[in-house]
Length: 160
Image (cartoon, rainbow, N blue to C red; front, side):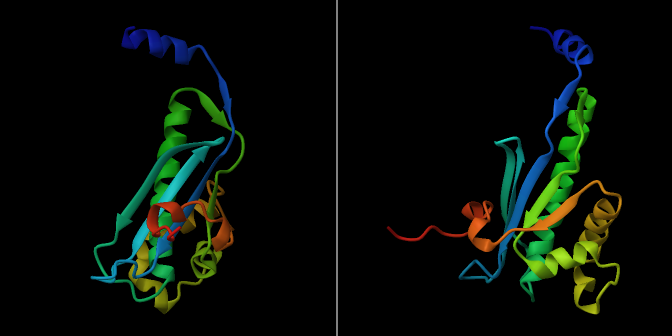
């Protein structure tokens, strides 16, 4: 099947896509040797996990909210990219994507207009996520740690 076939097929269709949701989380100082944090996310379109990521951070985090906020920013960027792709193929999203996080400090930074001195070291991520939330292009919500899906990518499984 040629590339043109797919292009014409997508151009002649209009799709209604359910909003995407995502989970982001971090394992603060998770590496037992270097004490670097591990951050990750999973993004869903309906019940399907489309991308997921788990990454060891290059520096040691001084607070638990720092790696969680880096994970929020990475997930927000991925959700933005997915929404652009969906828009390009003619899919329309009628609701704001929701990103779940289990760290209340990180969530408060997404809606709080005051930049605290404690969060200056995550300034770029702060501005990116905060702007997406303020423009109503992203919504962030709390999820209890026991219900955090993204944990499976970053934290070791217990012994049976």
